Length: 464
Image (cartoon, rainbow, N blue to C red):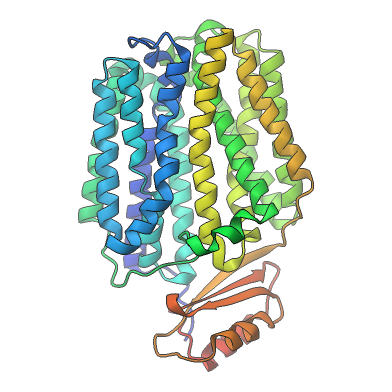
């Protein structure tokens, strides 16, 4: 039976609605990034930058602690139940932040926000609602919604903060979250069958394999360093735009808009070159080196608004390339049956870095009353990343293909895996009978698709 080349109406509805859910929730999170440090400083206790850093990063701490447990919980009690609870926590935390009359209560509210750790449950629900051959496209829709929301937030947040203040942004966040909750209830389809998906969920039995893989450890450190530096930068950059640039918060978008656009535009040819020409490692290392240059430049030379804009431009070019290439590297490097686990660990490291980056930045700024130690820390993180990544193996130019196994098939799983793995151009194959799926890692330049189709037909594997 041939694979359908297009997503069904239900799959499109599921992918678009869950991408919208992500966008609404991430918009609420991203909107505070460029304005939090300035407005939180006006609260009682906010004159202590260490407290501001803790408030900024508290979200990441509870997110890191609960992200994987919430995903596993959704396997037992149902995806939507966990998503409802997570969104309710995020909304409650947002209201607490809006009502906070002291920086300490803002820390508590941010921690409650982060406790709504639903990303793993949302990914699992998307896997339940899409066929294997279309799951990558569905995941890409979510990725695109996150990237666009981040860019929109950097530009929109300063003006919103002028109109409604930080409490107003938190109330807006609560409203967006409630809208997302209603969307899950009314728009997102209910899966006919819910099962574990190794390509989309973390499996505790595979954690040792993932945590011992040196290639994956490099990437886990990388996402930690990248997002710790991002949070550290946004802990102090709004203050510098005020103090050095002389720009009030409402007009910070004048700076963010051009540098974000430049970053997106220049990211595209770099990614195409890396993926199509099989130079992903070279592009990756170049972007890390570029990020190091940006952080070192911010440390040593930022005397005027012109130089702030210049270094931010370099930063966003590197950031966008790294943000796009790292998930691709995870997909290529991770063992086929442990991809979901590898991504779960990767996302947990990213969440933890949000706490560590902002907390350390707040502490350093408070102690030294200067942004230089903050950017020096970021430059050090980048230098270590470049060093540990230099010896990484160049990833094979591969992609993952997934095929559904018909419920009626009950053959020899090991033999089928071996046969699929022996086909020309197939680098790895595994059949997971409990999930009714065959996962193949195949060469991008081509594999013997006809032979795969023949074997699939012979073993009664349905591909729709």
